[in-house]
Each structure stands twice: as C-alpha cells, then as structure tokens.
Length: 424
Ligand code: AMP
Ligand code: GLY
Image (tube, rainbow, N blue to C red):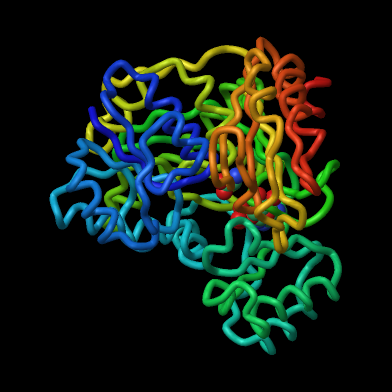
C-alpha cells in the first residue's frame, strides 16, 4: 500500500510513524509534514486548506489511500472532492464533518437523536442578546464559539465578567473570525472526561485504546483551555460496563443517526465525553483522531493500522481484529511561550538527540521547522513526547526523563499529566 497522510502536526507524526511500521505499507508520504516527520515519511508541500491541490497530489503520487489528520480539510470538503475524482480517502464528507465544524449543528444532531449531552440555554448571533442572556443562566456556564477554534473557543466560567469578556472577544472583536460570530451557551457538566475514539465504516467500528486529555494550559487544571497538553491511555479508565453504556447510548445512536440523516461516515470519530453522575454525556464530536490522544494511543496499537484504515475507507471493517498492548501510554506536550494565546515561534530547540536516546521514549514533532541538529519552534504546540510503560508510573517516568532533555527558551509543559491516575 502507498499512503498519503494529510497534515503536519504531532498527530500526523504519530500516524506516519505507526503506518510505516506496517508490513502492508510500501511507502508513506505526508503533506505538508514537518522536519521531524521527514525522518519517517517523504514530506511534500501542501496547503491543507486547498482540497483540490490535495486531490491533485494524491493522483500524481498514485497513492492507494489518503488519510486526513486535521479537521480543517474535512470541514472544507476534502472527502467529497476525492470522491468526485475517484480517489480513495479515509475521512467523513463535508456535511458529516459539521459534527465538529459547528457546535450548533452537532448539538442539534444530538438532540435530534436522543444522544446524552449538556442542555442548551441559547444560541446567539448578536453580542447584545448574549450579554442579556447572561442574566438568566446557571453558573458555572459554558460558552462555545460555533466554529473551529483549535480547542480555544470554549470557556467554562463562574464569573459574569469573564463570560462578558469572552463574548466580546468572540462577537465584537472577532478574535476567532467567522467561527466566533455565533455562540452557544450550555450547561456545565461535572465529572471526569474521557476521549473515546472509533474508526468506522459507517456501521461497523473498532475503538482506539481509551485516553484522557488534559485540556487546561497549566498544572492542576488551571489556566485557559488549549488543544490538549498531554494524554494518558490505560484500560482502567474504561471499565466494561461503562463501555457498554457508551456504545448503547452514544456510539450506536450516533452511527444510526448519521445514516438516517444521509451522512455516510468513513473515518475516525472522536467522542469527547464527560462521565457524569447521570452517565456519560457528549461534550463534543471530532471528525478525526485526537491530538495529542493519538500520540499516547497509537504506540499501544498491536495490529495493522494501515489495513484497518484501508478497510474502513472501502466501507467494510468487518473482520478486522484490534489488539492493544497492556500497560500505559502517555504523552506530554511541550508548548511555546505564550501558548494558547500568541505563541512565540522561531526559537531554537535543543536536546532532541538526547531525548531520542531515552529508552522507550518517542518524540513526535508538532510545530517545528528545520531538521537534524537545528530545529526551530513553529507553532503553539511544539513537541509531543510519548512513552509506553508496563504501568502509568513507569510510562510517566520515561516521558518526563525525555522531556527533561529538551531545551526551548520560554517553553512550558505540564508536569502532572497522568499524575492523579498514577497514584491510583
Ligand atoms: P469542546 O471543544 O466542546 O470539547 O470543549 C473543550 C473542553 O471544554 C472540553 O474538553 C471540556 O473540558 C470543556 N467543556 C466543554 N463543554 C463542557 C460542558 N458542557 N461542561 C463542562 N465542561 C465542558
Ligand atoms: N485533544 C483534543 C482534540 O483533539 O480535540
């Protein structure tokens, strides 16, 4: 199989790294990739928002399968473009990708198919309406910008001042662009979060190892929401009874609902769940693998990922067997100074070679440029350091030992990824 992976972050690095290990894979390209990915795949320039150029590229390379990493090209209709051109791609079409592309669309979908989720106070197109609505909500309140904001368009707050400021940033100052022109207020759910990710052909599905992200920027879940600062994956966070409930009340109704609404879905589907006292509820859908969930989960995969992706893209996942290595996977994100606000880029990254020498650790590149001995920061999330271990404590030790070797001026990372769960 010849495979093209679209994207150029830590998730795509982990995907390429895993796919390249498969006996059924002859060659992997990544577009646009990055300096780190270039060690595991041939990188080709691409603007991921240009879905026509992506199709041209896949046709020119003669690939058997294109796998899309990030949400943006999916929301822009890359799957539809490939289908028109008779090119095989794994990922949902434009309409189904709205499950991630619009919080209002996904809320209406869930409400329409009785899928448990947070209640809604309202959806607002005018800042004035939103300010007024703040007088009649319960606190804490969750405010969501409707469109894609790389994980930064959500505020959970008990402060009316903070809520007002967020509405102003989204709807008056236009900080999220078009994505913030419509906002939704919803009920705050309480519980532990769980990232439950499946690969589906629309009917059959296999699931990824369960994972837990750390969304806040700083230790002890302080600071603003980010795209994710680190993840651990252990089977203990998904007892069999809980999984049964998730499948019966959330996964099946979602797949049935997609089919009923005329949306064929072939690809990864991510359920961001809150495990509440009243059972699991959906916080969000993502139409792709999680980032950084992928970097903690794929190292645990003990099956042919390329084959599973191909079969899902062909519409028949039945018969695929998945096996996950026991123990733990963990990953820690090293972020630029200023992230998730305005990240400082162009800073030299030192210590990559020393980190790579730590047994059991793998360093995935997210926002980097350059390669070899000189590599520079090129985004908010710079590197994702991943490790496996026989238990969470040993995986954490390895990951943090490797993190300690990397030097980037001003960078920050959380020191408590998986800490609570490791203590038991
Ligand atoms: P989302 O992009 O919708 O997943 O939101 C990002 C993060 O905000 C989630 O991972 C949660 O940590 C938090 N969040 C979103 N919706 C809610 C909610 N209804 N109640 C509590 N926290 C939420
Ligand atoms: N880590 C959360 C996400 O991928 O959206």
